[in-house]
Amino acid sequence: MNKPYGILFALLLTASPLLAQKSDNPAAPGFDVAGSDARAVQIADEVMRAMGGRKAWDKTHFISWNFFGNRRLIWDKWSGNVRVDNLKNDQTVILNVNTDKGRVFRNGKEETNPDSVAKYVKAGKGAWINDSYWLVMPYKLKDSGVTLKHLGEENTTDNKPADLLQLTFKSVGNTPDNKYKVWVDKSSRLVSQWAYYPKFSDEKPGFTLPWTDYQPHGEIKLSGKRGPRELTDIRVFTGLPGEVFTSFDRPDLNRY
Image (cartoon, rainbow, N blue to C red):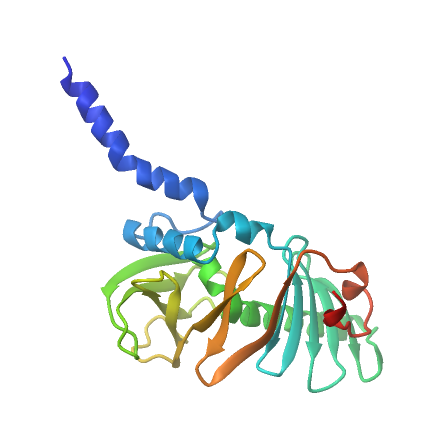
């Protein structure tokens, strides 16, 4: 008489961790659940919690950063508005990454030619896709189109133990043939290293770089140091004036 209830109770106990993971860090629509393995998904959820948690990430409104001294980006996560200031010249692109609409300032004036505007808005979105991935990739392990695999355990180049994940992509982003390997530190559960492969079939990576110097920003953690490369001036804001995404005058973020 008690046996079916005992089996049911055991099943509930077994399933409860997975249910908890789904509830506190749901995958984005289009995440490859069928192609991903359960251990990789579990590790992705552990990374999210170590970074501050899904609620904190969803509450994060504005992020700005300097990408290797080339560009400064300001991103409104909630609306999709992005400002990309080219730090090598006067070019500024203000766009919405959800609508692909935007405006362009270059060579001392606003660009009005529709083809030119479309060209530079597309390039601005491409910069945001690339530059934001370098900053917030750990929050995007369960994004649309991502397939996650756990490749076992492997030490980083500085000989620290880690879980090794593989990320591949299905028809998303500008370079869907890319592959990444991501090392998740055994102790902190933070991403500690990544390797980039231009094509899934590549055996050798284009680069392998560390993720170090995590700092609290608002309620989340972000890392800017990638070995010889560095993202700087990382800031999180709860509010910014609307003119940041309407005026071509470059804002002084120290005021906010």
